Amino acid sequence: MGIRFLTAGDSHGEALVGIVEGLPAGLKLDERVIQRELARRRKSYGRSSRQKIEKDEVSITGGLWKGKTTGAPIAIVLPNRARTVKGKTGGGLETVPRPGHADFAGVMKYGFDEIPPVSERASARSTAMRVAIGAVAKAFLGELGVAAIGHVRSIGSIAARASTLSPREIRKRAERSLVYCADGRAGRRMIAEIQRGRTEGNSLGGSVEVIVTGLFPGIGSHVEWDRKLDARLAGAMMSIQSVKAVEIGDGLSTYRARGVDAHDAMRVERGRVIRPSNHAGGIEGGMTNGEDVIVRLYAKPIPTAPRRALTFDLETLEPTESPYVRSDICVVPVLAVIAEAVASWVILAAIMEKLGGDTIDDTLAAKKRVVAALSKRLSR
Ligand code: EPS
Image 1 (cartoon, protein in one colour):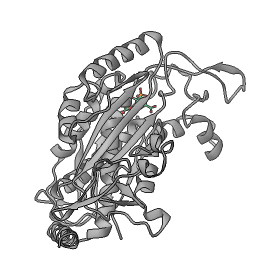
Image 2 (spheres, rainbow, N blue to C red):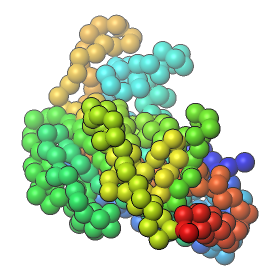
Image 3 (cartoon, rainbow, N blue to C red):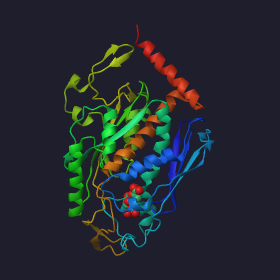
Image 4 (cartoon, protein in one colour):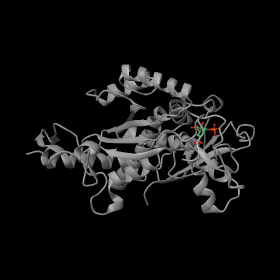
């Protein structure tokens, strides 16, 4: 059995809950590691006043002994501070489905006569637990020398310049930016774009990129559709609220290129393959090829905005406007943090299929063996 997780909880309920299962024993973990990632997620510019209410103070209530994993399921509890929807919805939300949200389809599917049982669970608040679980994955990946780096490529009509910086430099610069953009000038223009959105009463979409470094070839598999790493990454990324498209490497430009120009030439040097380009985004045939994995996500503007959309009331079936009390203007910066967490989980799951282990020492020893064998295979 590989690693897996489950989440539960509502946006304004008592708490979000996560259970992570299948990790080996011996991984050092404490709440501060998760807290740090949740703080990165809360920081970003363009979010609603809800982020000032939430403190995201997590507890790990199972799976640890003296600060290390035991191999048992890890339980994470993340209380919500904004516990009531009442007083914030203006009374409209209960029966008026907001276009672009899960409201209409969820009510039809599950047979509710009100929207909150759907909207509470569909809310992007749930990404807080995805980030908490991703923080656990990151702690493990750190031991394996693997890191995921998320940054913003565009917001609205403002795009960052194509970067030639190293992933480490991208991380450093993005962390200094209020919108997690490594291009300082574009970042300032993105902030102005968000301010304009706020004035106009509109929300903004955009795109982010995650770069995963420190990988060896052969993570994932070509042998069956659901073992392909790119398919698993794309599926996981599409599960994040507002994401409408996912690109691996240069997928959105190479489809227009011709033949070999779309691919990455190879040569061998000192026990490893060197390539002048990475159009494939580090994945060929559903497996890592040893280059950095590159995943790009494209998010729609969030559907709740002060400028109302036309909809109808489920009770009266009369036309009306979508309800509004408060909302984010732009969630793209925070998407960089969420996507990092989601990528970390998928990559860790695929690595564990390859390396296995009941203890972290087993896993680290297996990695050493695999990397040494690969290097030998590429040496004369
Ligand atoms: C969300 C609506 C807003 C966001 C929320 C996601 O919450 P509220 O309805 O309380 O104003 O703030 O995101 C978070 C709370 C979060 O932590 O990211 C939605 O409808 O998806």
